[in-house]
Structure formats: structure tokens, C-alpha cells
Length: 133
Image (cartoon, rainbow, N blue to C red):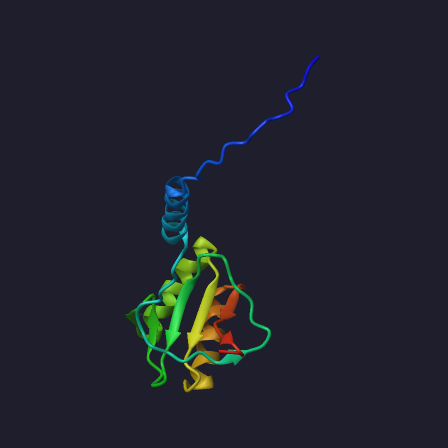
């Protein structure tokens, strides 16, 4: 068996157009699949907490603004109307999320909390923002 001794390599050019296409497609893919979470509706300043956790379930959201106005899923309700919606949530076994402004009355938050417990809801959460924000 005889080997060639004078093997020369030809220098070629690497075409980067396909590489640019792949990188561009990956960029579009990640931009379209990333989730942007916007919470439209009532502007509230959530209290900060160090021990807050992210909740993954679909919640019934009650919002209390700084003036004490109660809203359910961005619809302003009276406390009697809220009670009927809480009873429906109990039948569906949905967790409750209370988003109260940091300037909101603690009495109003406790009143809604007690109403939820009277109806029979057991999963009640209070929304907070991270302490670093």
C-alpha cells in the first residue's frame, strides 16, 4: 500500500449566509415563543415581600385599589355581588388571589378574606411584588 506524500489542501471559503439565516430564524422563534405578561386593568402598587412565590394556577382575581374600590376580574362590584361570585368559585374549586394596593385599608382586605372563608374557599392568596423591585 502506497501513500501519497505530497498531499496539498485546498483553501476554501466558508459561506456564512446559511449561518446568518439560522441565527435569524432562532431569533424570531425565541421572540415569538417568549411570553410577555401584561396585566391590564386597575393600577395598584403591590406590597413588597421577601418570601413571595409564583402561583401557576388559574385564579379568581379580586383587586382592591387605594380608595378601597373592589373589582373582580377588572369589573367593579359591590360586596353582595362579590359574595355570589365567590360562591360560584367555591363550586368550581378555583383559588382566590387578592391584589390589594399597599395604601388600601387592611380592614377591607380582612373583610374580603373573611367573606371568602365563610363561603368555603380554602385557597386564598395575597399578591405581592418582590422586595428587590
